Length: 171
Image (cartoon, rainbow, N blue to C red; front, side):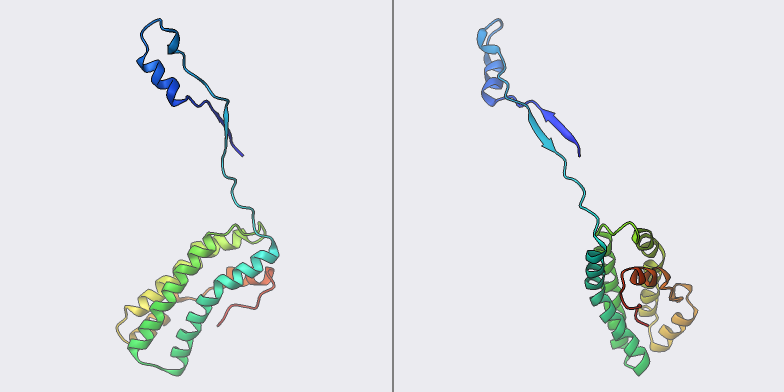
């Protein structure tokens, strides 16, 4: 915590000092008692129970969006619907990323969160954006099978889920 002490000069004292003639007894500045200003402390780290709940809650919309894309790929769909669903997954992933970054995770999982945000999440977003830009279902399939960003690595997410006693990532 940072503790700052400031001296407040009253407006009347400032005006008097500014308007008084040289040597006038009314030129003294009036001072008030020191004011203490406290800097806001950073939020506390989540407990493991809070982290479990937060991670699960934050992940639900993204997992739902990924499930839709997986169903599209598995069951077949139109290019227009697939592209819309992939772009919805990108938006959900970006929202998920912002919300994950906003939390102070327990020290035990913070390194995995950091690694996931640095490697896995950008790769997922890049892959999905490339598939959406492919122009066709076949083009998206080609991107998925050839783009290195599409090599689905859930190593850090799986570790986080294991530590938090959550089910494995969706496949």
